[in-house]
Amino acid sequence: MNIHEYQAKELLAKFGVPVPAGYAALSVEEAVAASKKLPGPLYVVKAQIHAGGRGKGKFKELGPDAKGGVRLARTEEEVRAAAADMLGNTLVTVQTGDAGKQVNRLYVTDGVDIAHEFYLALLVDRVTGRVAFVVSTEGGMDIETVAHDSPEKIHTFDVDPATGFMPHHGRAVANALGLTGDLAKQAQRLAGKVYDTFLGTDAAQIEINPLAVTEASGDSGAKLLVLDAKVGFDSNAAFRHKDLLELRDETEEDPQELEASKYDLAYIKLDGNIGCMVNGAGLAMATMDIIKLNGEFPANFLDVGGGANKEKVTAAFKIILSDPAVKGILVNIFGGTMRCDIIAEGIVAAAKEVNLSVPLVVRLEGTNVDKGKEILANSGLAIVPANDLGDAAKKIVAEVRSAA
Image 1 (tube, helix red, strand yellow):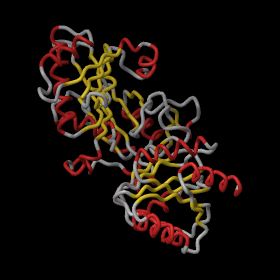
Image 2 (cartoon, rainbow, N blue to C red; image 1 turned 135 degrees about the horizontal axis):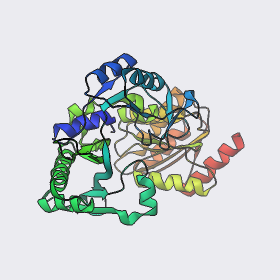
Image 3 (cartoon, rainbow, N blue to C red; image 1 turned 90 degrees about the vertical axis):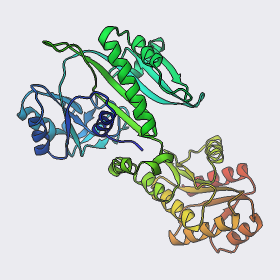
Image 4 (cartoon, helix red, strand yellow; image 1 turned 30 degrees about the vertical axis):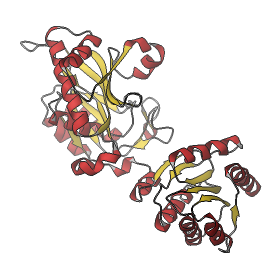
């Protein structure tokens, strides 16, 4: 589960991470009211969507010369104009794809004088199974280019869960950023608090970009501030964080993926034309691969899991068929803990309920497979049986092409 920038920064602030003052807004008037609460004289009006690259993004409705989804404002009138441009319009960034995302929320935050921008992220290292820090002196909007062209400028290290975050981890962050004196101490404290946030919320990733050093002014020295943040959580730990579930913005999620989550189905929409329903992530990946090997492309990844029942299978069919690009469906089930006859009953019920009009190929193997095949054969539906995965892929590709 992902959350908006303003929510991420509010969460980090609860753990003591320094962030500039800011307020969320759902309307132009709320955006103007938010600016009045801030000291100024510089404000930043930021579109809130679940995608990066907002500053370089373009609004579909405003033309190619319009500014992006992050704008500076120095007066209430400029805040009003920026908010009016953004709210309700579609922002296209490198991460949204051509469809873009409609902006329904804004974040009006206090502007700061930036001396330097850094990059800091925490994530789970799948190799070591530990929380890893990713740190770079080259923060800002082009961090992807840095990773590609200058990987030596990105430093990584992980934290042993037996000891947790230690002072030497903080020093490693400060050293990687080239900070000394008071700024180094600030970096050490900030890194520890971000680590606390990561563990305390069961996060999957925390990305801070930029982590900024502000210009010193008057008696106030330079400060480290989080100017932008993305936070994603481990959905498997959601039951421990009911408060975080309240931060979920369902309008930012794919409707099919959202519906799938209600039935505990692992679903990801893809760009092909053959819908897939499989049990087990590895088997699902193999199914998608063999469809491509036979010259077509999968329309989705869908894992019904090991404990699917008739209701789950019916829901899975409805979700697959809600994609207009689907021209055929391949069901590939290996019944271990899951019985093939239960799957077959679900397939038949779903096909009848949704008035299935695209070719359907089913490959069943495992527990009660003969009973499952008998149910399919006696269903009166035009279900094409398959003997194995290779046979199933060939048949669904042939059916889709013949129907085209």
